[in-house]
Length: 515
Image (cartoon, rainbow, N blue to C red):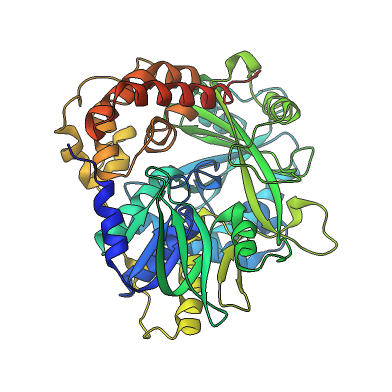
């Protein structure tokens, strides 16, 4: 197969003037890109590393209204999130499905307290509600999660939210964007903001694979780089004051036996005032998260020992047997791009609502928000960009836009994320060859990732096109040589490239193992 990247570079350099250039290929950037291109705007998206590389691949894997935000009184955010949850389930049924959550109670008075709150949650969702919440007795709670600690258990409240695979949604948005005529490029960091008479007029970007620098001009430039928005803002204005307060969230992944069922556990108030989830995901149990203020941003944030200990201790208060360090298959950290608020030092109290900002030169920045509201973020930022840049008025189409691969007939296993593409994936060489006995993936998926999903590195494949790194870090390290070999066949790379790729991935994956 030939490398698809040169054609993308050619498409970029052949276009003299874009309507919109979007910097950043995470949830907010991809949402904005789909919004722009489906309105008919010529749109270019540039990603410095890989789609979803940062925060957008490190979530709790939930499409939800935010029960915690309800308790904090953020009614508007909860209502908007629940509305978007319902739309996303309609627009991407191959990616989003209902998941039951149990709030286990060990004091009788908490049953009506949580029950009333979750009925309000149902009501705010309106006609897009998934399923009504309900109270369960002691045995009903144990039937749902047999591994709950039974001593003192009074019962629980069962409610429903959505579950998804975050980086697979990112790739689905990428493919939706491309299907509507958009052009996107990863491994292409923006290195400068072009200006004409003091006004933003485009960008320069570096092709990390060839070392060449290219220029792209546009009527509107949008900074949607998540935790890195301040770095792009400082390319525009060197003394721009930082607007973010980064906060780290950590998750651990253990075996399925710690839930022993298909219902998630929600702990409504941990010792640090957060909520904690234990969620069944791809045949594993995902537990998290933390909320630790961080002094600086990092591309590969590392979990603190105290964060891992906190998750294990909190989960152990509800689960029997309790997970231990030796049970951890992978541990990962993500940074939330929380917008600074005066006189608020506790990042748990900062709103996840998104923020829009236009600089004096016209650079438009979008930050904050969460995966559930990615579509709304895209709508708001493109409305602003179109107005600022004088683009032709065009209505939003994304509320009912079926995302790439849309299908209601999908298997219940990991194959579901491909939706209507599944038949084509299964037709590739290696569809029946397992990548590793501890992982659900096949060799054909590597070829598909390279040919159709812009995977450029072993990390792109094992961390985000497939979720091997998050499901089992050791197993993913063992597969790296074969992944590199298949990618080299697809991309025309040599043995030296393969060795370097395997070494780089193994260094990365080592950071996902508990020490």
